[in-house]
Amino acid sequence: MRRATLILATLLLMAPAAALTAADKTFTPDTIHSRIGFSAKTLFKVEGNFGKYSTDISGDPDSLENAKVRVEIDVASINTENKSRDTHLKTPDFFDAAKYPKIVFTSSKVWKQGGQVMVQGTLDMHGVKKDLTIPFDPTFGKNGAGNDTWSYEGSLKMDRNDFGIGSGSIAAKIGLKDTVELNLQLVGFFHEKEAAKPAPAKAPAKKHKKAA
Image (cartoon, rainbow, N blue to C red; front, side):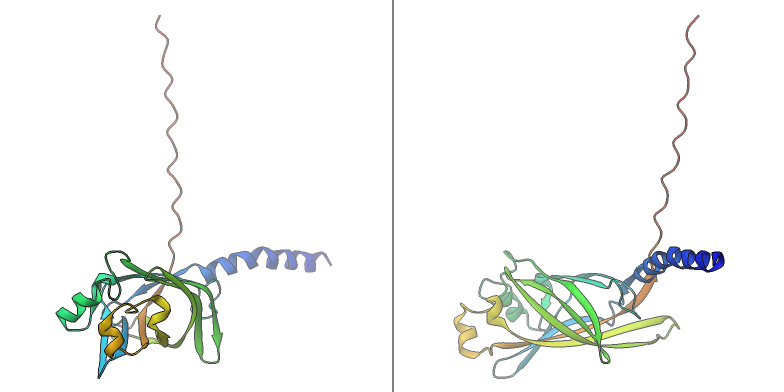
């Protein structure tokens, strides 16, 4: 009986440590192969991407325990391979990059559904916040250097008018379709988070001798 109690106590003590280890991983993106893109339609298909962004992704890639995702995009980095069009997209007619310089997605829940990873969260864009869920197809393997690599590819169609993008633009009303598709590819590596280093011990205060 005593032995069983000791085993149970040991397992209870180990459980929090195991949970901490599962959550104690961070994702570093491979910026060469990662892409935050989109496509829209006028008389033809227009594809583009945002070249500058930052990610804060953590959790266990296998169990998704305590998984958290935050992506911050620099609106001014929009690129559709057409300089005059990109300049117009940054104006108040569309994204208004001067007033709304960032697009931010923050997750509230991450889970597995079939073979996909579902990421639910809030998209903050152009002064409007909307809840949405993005499905991702995960892939795991070795890259050319032999390193463990994770890839998450997802897409989502949305109505640009929900965020007021181009709603007041005559050019958009004439030729731009309402539906825009997000095309996301996040490739990178999970690493164990470095444990916080203990603060160095303070040297004992020197005692000053009293003058004779």
